[in-house]
Image (cartoon, rainbow, N blue to C red; front, side):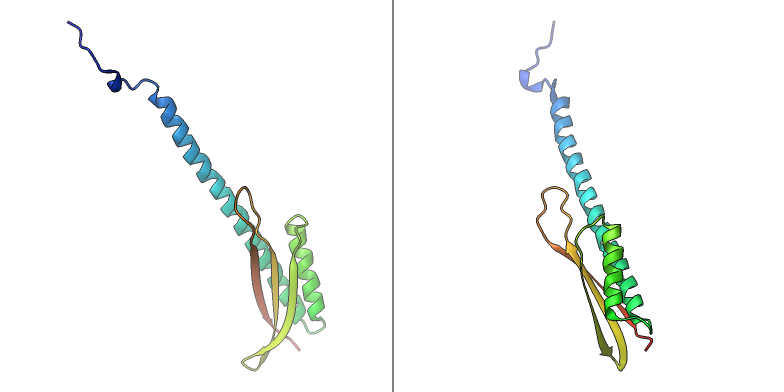
Length: 128
């Protein structure tokens, strides 16, 4: 005697459906990781260029403009020509003259995320 199975108990073809759902989730996860990596790379590059610019501007024989130019040069070279806005200012903090360099650029959008801006600040004590 043969056993009779209901059509609902048959799971043929379910592997294809599972593969599609898992593939979509894995693709979304991979794209999210790529976006995160790209944003962190740009942030770290901006921070390094702002720091370099602040150290250049803080030297005794240099000005704020020198630090600003250096930060733009380093950031644009490392980011493949991406437009970078840099400001350099001198201020007194706790009786000590310091230089602050602020570098900003547009948030790199890999796929669907909207626009934004990444800003990095760096400080250095003036030698003057």
